[in-house]
Picture 1 (cartoon, rainbow, N blue to C red):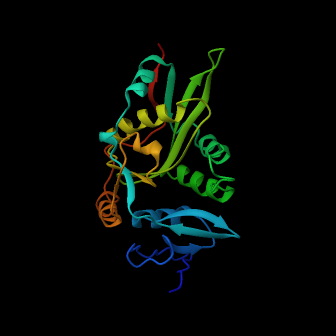
Picture 2: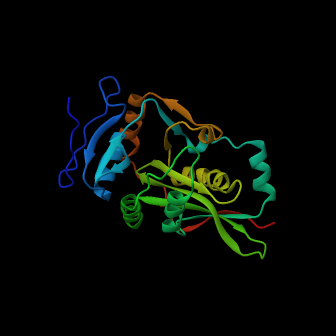
Picture 3: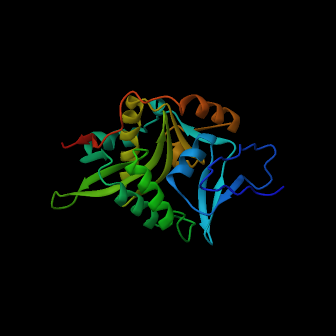
Amino acid sequence: MTIPFIHAHAPIFPEYNPETNQYDGLVCLTDTLTPELVLAAYPKGLFPWFCENGIFYWFSLHPRAIVQPEKIHISRSLRKKLRHQKYKVTVNHNFPAVIAACADTPRAGQSGTWIAPEFQAAYTALHRLGHAHSFECWLPDNAGVWRLAGGFYGVQIGRVFYGESMFAWRDNASKIAFACAMPYLAACGIALLDCQQDSEHMQRFGSKTIPFADFRARLGSLNPQNLQRKIGCEIVQQNLS
């Protein structure tokens, strides 16, 4: 069995079947990364994981980790921080800074980043098209000036938000951003957050894993649906006390 090569001028991706896939989730290859490819692949549960020698490797995972935004779990300690810490969470106030920070922030057990310049260019183009969104957490410095402290970004297609990456330059900044973003996304009509892998970080927020077939069925239902309201450029939540 050969790995399919998908051409940008004909972005028709194969279906992933974990029972027959022989390549540990690798589904296909491309020699470029464009918004059109991302928008064609994600509704099938595929995503580009990394680039090597100009070739992009597209994967899927079974089981799949998800969060239902309206059922997010907020720990007692995080609730306390949300009540007593000064912060401001915004959406789409600085997408380029968020994706750059996600690429630059060191990760435990990783020697580099998968968010290569080609990824940053493609997802920034998706942002300009209205499909990629960033959530920013701002915390005051010692002089009281608001500084970007953490956040995350992802891709929205219909009522699904595909989470990509997050970063934190100060303690709890990404947690605050995520905790405030989920009710906002739920109010916009997002019914499913794709976490891809079930990390300990997402488990704290109530993530769960489901069989890929169930995940794929949910995408088929939710991706074609319209949001109740547009994900804008605004303040999501703030605590100035």
